[in-house]
Length: 342
Image 1 (cartoon, helix red, strand yellow):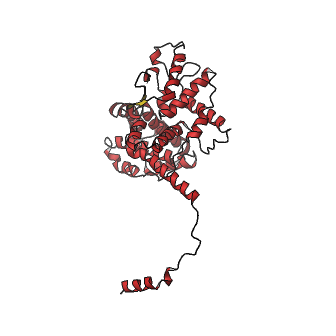
Image 2 (cartoon, rainbow, N blue to C red):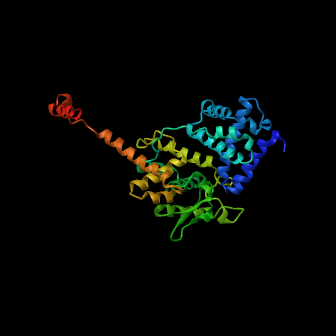
């Protein structure tokens, strides 16, 4: 193996064999690693004048990686969260590589020593019950696309599905016989079942009857649950576009006062916050959302506490009209302090 090709060789092995084979990571996770290195190669070529095929592992230094992270923030306008994710991908690769290249261990350890940036915790954005009702009223159910979009929005909220889970959803993943459930294929190839109740079940039943009438070139059970005009499954962008369209329509209502971007994940947050306000235990919410650790789910409890604090602050009134007492004029207190200092 030529030295000039060691970076390319190890990176290909890391993405193609290690992550997919040994770690059994999902396609989306591997894609996130790939994107991080695609940007890194772009940075090396544009800012350092080094073509990707000329990069070697010895070229990687702490200073280079720091410059790359600064470039992400300052020139590409990436958030601190994105910066930290890109750094995590590089750390993962170098932890894999260091076992095979002990001669570069010192510099690798320097890069692994680059810490993630602290970021301010923001309150979880979510829609209220009234705002959700307004949003769900926007699709025109007299049209085929409108009916599809309503089912998409309602199921996105009611199942708290991630957008990729909706993209991958197939007819076979919906069971309407008791107990009705939707099977979601989540992160890390984990599968969970979420109950379908109430009007959501009725909507799905009607939608699936219409779904059967389509000319699928595959078994009906394998057909995508949500599809475009070419009968191909909707993409992540497609689902986001549909949601954005109805959010803009909802904003025409005076009661829909939303000052943050409404993404598919906001509907997931909305379901979690609704469950929390209804008194559902965090452990059950964790399982419902498919979190691997309840610590992740605790962000909703913190957000709820913050909302309550802000509500209390907005209603607080100063009822104490007198000036505060001057404790220096309290003779008993001053005598006690003098005795304490003896």
